[in-house]
Image (cartoon, rainbow, N blue to C red; front, side, top):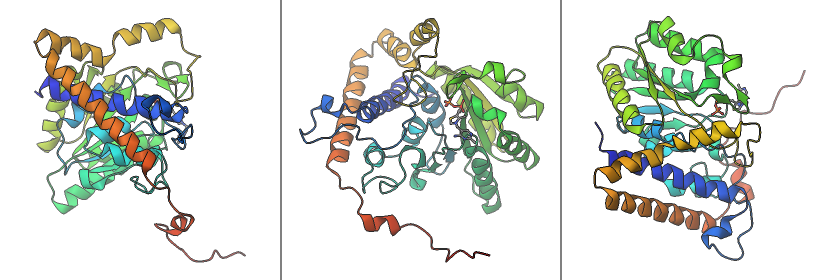
Length: 333
Ligand SMILES: Cc1ncc(C[n+]2csc(CCOP(=O)(O)OP(=O)(O)O)c2C)c(N)n1
């Protein structure tokens, strides 16, 4: 079992990163005391926040090694940070700076860091699953011991790539852990009324993939479930699925007030926020001072990332022609 303080650290780093990015996307960066010349809305492009879902990447990634591979979603900051990516390079990318992961040309949904096994966020719903399965197949062919993990939302299970990926992984007995972050909503639409059956875990079991359902807002429960499933995948027992039940605190994107939600649902969900729940346990264990320090460190790290992003240069116009492939002139009939 992972030390609770370590899980807590991952969660508060994700929360701090996303809170800062959210404010920056809404034009409130001055709240952090950045320079007077700072213009509003420094984050370029849509920003999908995973606020409230942090326990899932924290609990799962605690069991991954740098050589393990991971694919993410449009809501990928938590997965990316938990897998070991650098918060400053991430923030620079959100700010569209040349020092960002994609040199400022990709934005939130294209962040990848192969050096820590993070194969990429993905704006196409369910598109990360077949990439993870392909990566797992490549690991097998190369004789490498690592595993692949695919994070996806409950909306993704209604797309074809979900079934294709699970099927391929079973047929070839591949080392993949599928992780469904079931936040009950698909963008702005409740998932329940448009989903047949009982969801991700039941669909996996129909394809002979053992699945575990867990309270995705209880980081220790996620940690324990992931420990067991990752061990099975590592041992060559084939794919596994973790179905983590959670709730997204914020709207679909950072400028969406999510007025379509029942305020009572939101109120109840906030009571189950994974971060205060973990903090209460740490306090009970007499670790309040350590938890305070973790919170201060996370804030300082993200402050530094914000300042670095503000000061970093933007790409030049000529950079638009770098990192692209010239496939030659098109042939027009
Ligand atoms: C193939 C595809 N269809 C539609 C969309 C538009 N879209 C973006 S997010 C989203 C819902 C995804 O739901 P879920 O996977 O549950 O994630 P959530 O946003 O709820 O966290 C949709 C339909 C898309 N990005 N890709």
